[in-house]
Length: 573
Image 1 (tube, one colour):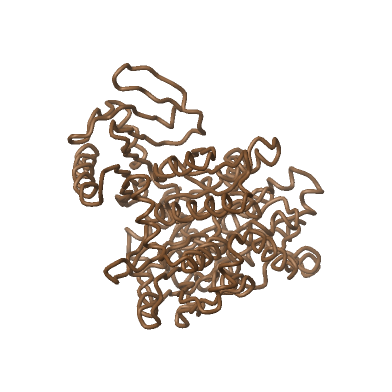
Image 2 (image 1 turned 60 degrees about the horizontal axis):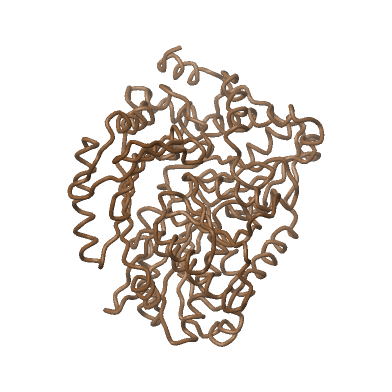
């Protein structure tokens, strides 16, 4: 059936809700929009689904959510009665229709005889991850599109370990989903099934979550000295982080000034262009407030509170938005410093980062005798390391992060946790305040000690129904004739993560990387810098990562410009 026929079949179906019917009738003369909505199915990948809110097979709506949930239900039913009884934990953020989609998912599970534990109010990703483990459910569902623009929503599935569902289990769920061809034919629970199977997540789960976070505090003395009078600004950017972040800060004794206008659960995120706290513009209201009260640090969380953005006042008195890499090395340096000072750094301590995350992590870990591990992009791979080490006791997980503003200290969750990261960020400000420093000064000290590294990434958007295929084709093309140089910077080796091999350019020697397979090409440069190209797993964007080692910021910026020009020429963009 072609997209026009699919569109007509939806429009003429009596089961279609009135909202959907009205929306689809309004586009009857827009061929391009009809093709986008019905020319493909919303892809369910390893991170679940993410798309623009609207009606159609390629959109985020109650029908695509129910279809995905029915596929998950079939997977759970095959696991047996015990798995069905253990059930699924469900959470959602402040985005448009998030609560509606969460309720729809719960109803489908109930209609299949599967227990559904739904939070009664918005809760962030890390608290969903914690709830899965605390309630011992067999899976979890998070309704969110993270830091995407307001037009988007998404559906993420978690495994029983609290990490995003494994590729193997995801593939099994996708197989069940693809068998469902009638999007409007989803089961509805009886009143008896609603009462029996849909339950509210107990309040004690929240209390245990905060209790676990308090155990991770590192500077109680500094907090006691500076916490109440601390000049620190926080914004939840209209997201789910407001209650948990302010709650944990209050519990450990830190006072943060909150951007009141951005505490409202606004589905339009009307005070920002994009609810992504890694952008300085998104933190602008917080920065203005910080200037008024004399604060030196501003931090914010995204709608599902799994990412933390930070801005600090520099020596000129202007606020700079730090990259995810900079925040990561600050937190890493702070955590290892405090553990070392207190004599509590485990002998088998380990840190985990994605391979596109800054190379500055390596020398910091070496200084403290901590083992560093690299994983593909995706926090689930960091979660897998935690799970492995809990089982074999070979290493003790200390900290993990990705350049995309995702951090996790502790093993209470298996995904990015901006709540615990916010706590550590505030605590870090207290610590440096207590010894007469600012966070910005400490960052400059880190550069002085380990050398300057400039990290950044650019995204090249792709449009249309074949966007994902076209992006992957670009990456595949890089493997045919590997680049040997980028301007004046020669390539020392090339990693092809789709084949798990690394090739030395000078000798041609091939070695195994030892990593899960993913479509990515990574160029190691002779001066210790790197360039990496990969398609985004959640958006139609080709991502290019640059990590430039140099003697100072000016030289690094000049080198970056040359590397970016050469990379764009290679890619033909």
